[in-house]
Image (cartoon, rainbow over the protein chains, first blue to last red):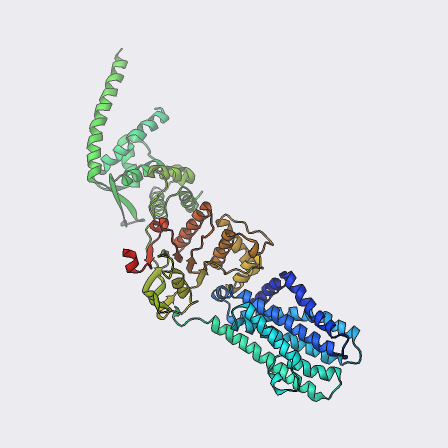
Length: 227
Length: 112
Length: 275
């Protein structure tokens, strides 16, 4: 447990020291929000949640890439890959919570006649899914530019595709549109259940995939034996 | 006797005395210090004796090896090498000549 | 001062006067024998430890320059038949290396001879195409570059790597600062690694590899960017680690230290060596 916390603390320090990145991350969801502020009520809420997801995934992507250099050394120093993954996720989830808090307050103040609890749920799920999503991209794509392009594509598709289309369920933030409809248009609980199921499934699967990817990358090679 | 003068004399000849004692058979530090005392050179302390032994060993005039004693701790035994014997012979001749000269001067001085 | 205290003080003074560990052992044992047989107080027989140590050192005509001969310890690292191919080119061809506790092995060879690859295989970071590596004890690895986190300061590095080794925050920081001091470096608090110079970052890298005192140290040209003084400090540290019983593998292209190491593994291909 100590090891996970030390990794989390270090990762948090690293994230918080990238000042300019932090500012961009913080302002990006706001830009998304304001872009749809004049439209249909609640559309801005959907966009701010997607903005949050994108911002945090990007942060996770960069954090994952930056950690590549030191992770082999940490592994040799006595960490297991699970310590490293969980520690980093913990740090990203914390940053995500800090990032979403002001936006939730913004929605509370600026929007009326919506289900606030459901919106809090969307934001929480977004944070939980975005962190492993970004880390997974960094694990699969060694260069940050490629990862960023993939993120851009995913979020772009999420925005333009019809949520009713079955194919969009394969996108990691689909739950955000679904629960959003429940929160804003006061539809039946089916939307909530479907969104929740998809969101939790993605969170679990992505976290597992990140853990497996790290375990494979940092595995003890078979040729090396300890007496 | 003036202790300081005596110490100076000893410093000049201690290595020769040690070589000479060892030419009669191998020995170790403590025994050598006893032998020097028995020959009337007084108490030669370890702090003086062992550095001399070490220097002689380093310059190849002595060889040394550790051996368990029948009683007590292991001792470092010193043995004179062929080079040591040669050096001793040469130095003994030189010393006799030197001591004779000094003796002649000192006795002439005393006779006046 | 009783016998044991005097002998202990003598041991320290002999080392300070540059007397090698083997000879120190002989001189101290001989003094102990004398004291046991004569039954006299050490100060009367030998005088103060410092003075006696100086007399011993003087009788040697200066510090002992010969590398001390040590009994080799148990095998810590055994690499057998390491073979690695890159794009059809065989970089490492059935390379063997055995390093025991208290030994330094230098890995030399031209650029591209596979020195770093060999070390990474020993560290278990890269798989060979054939061969095995057997390690007895904990591994410490100092990469040629990387291995530090840009946005963390040196103390935070010590804590992060130290926690992996099971060191508390305080212990990790102390160990890190002690290791840094041996390289004549005082880690600046609050300066992130990305703001350190290349040589200083290598010092950090080296100190991190040593945290927790691993039994086997793999160092990949760790002195890049060191000035001459630090370079000498580095080798003195390596010799000290060896004397403490560590097994050390150093990748190097500087050959002037090879007389001070125990083993040399030359990875230059036989054909190239003749050329």
